[in-house]
Length: 101
Image (cartoon, one colour):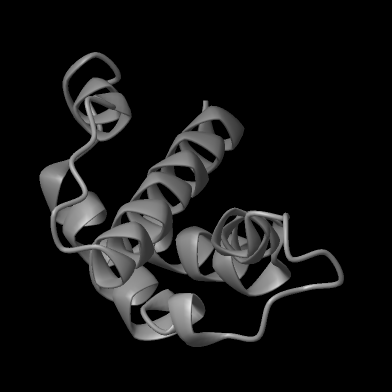
């Protein structure tokens, strides 16, 4: 369904946001997380859609690792900023737009 596809693309964007920013903080960061591959392969999401999501995510989130920490220095602020991005109306609107193309 369309709603499921929107949610999967949002999840893909979240994974990408986290990866982009954790690598920016530590270039040796390696993850065993295969979520992005899972979304692509298992859910048969069109590669071109994922490419657009990656470009949009990089343009909008690649500096999150430089953002000021939130209230607690113990908070994983990269994760918190990426979750805000995941929940944003802007991301949802962008996804709805590219699904219409």
